[in-house]
Length: 355
Image (cartoon, rainbow, N blue to C red; front, side, top):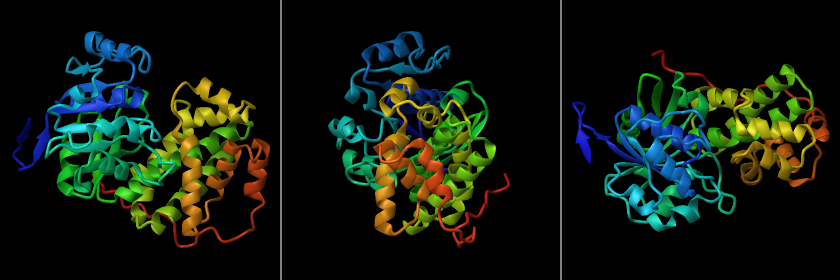
């Protein structure tokens, strides 16, 4: 059911989250704390049963008690039945197959929220595009949530802000209203492409930072990779029609800093294992979760190449993941590039509102 508010917009009160990993479960708690009744679907029926009966998800959020209004559901179609808002937190490369049974099953006013960070390997689709195609939902009912959103910190109700991006201001407002709480502050943004690119490529840069730190390199190297990584993201975003201001805000620099600096970031952690000498297979096992940067590096590099956009960090990370470049050669390749001016007209502009 959706109910009109005093601001004449429809605020979701019944939500479904597809994906019972750490971020999906955390966002379910955020929605519940904001006043929604939430059903969570996951591949593992035992995890869904634990969420339903004990309001915990020990596999992904150990020690965290979920609100009583969060329940688990092992039937995907039943999970989304009657939902005003459907949030998707699946691995980017498997999302299309998982969601296929839901095509044309959502309500006429249901908004769909992407919590995913990646680019589809076979199509170069951003996640909002994938959701619109797969679920057969108009683009103006799709929103993207991205920002410095480390799941374990939010699950502990530590204060953070995020960005809700949608082509429709009404959709952005509906989603923002559904997740706003005392500890979770959403800002709205119309730049869907820019916000999604930031969320996807920052994972690749975090892999590079992790590799560097795994090799024993320090904060100078980390700062270099973060700032030059942001330049790469900005170049590609502008080539795809994104707005420059997005890259200096929460979804850009904010999320990039959190992902590259925190040991809770799976991409940073996986990169550290690689830097310490682990194989990619062993690093994936040791990380214990989906590190989207692994599957995103190659399609992002190919997209940039076709657009004529220079992304040397992304290219080097993709080569390391493909086995074409050793971790020791990564820094050498980046530092041996031709010298040039730092600013080339693609420096992100910070215009975050003062509120």
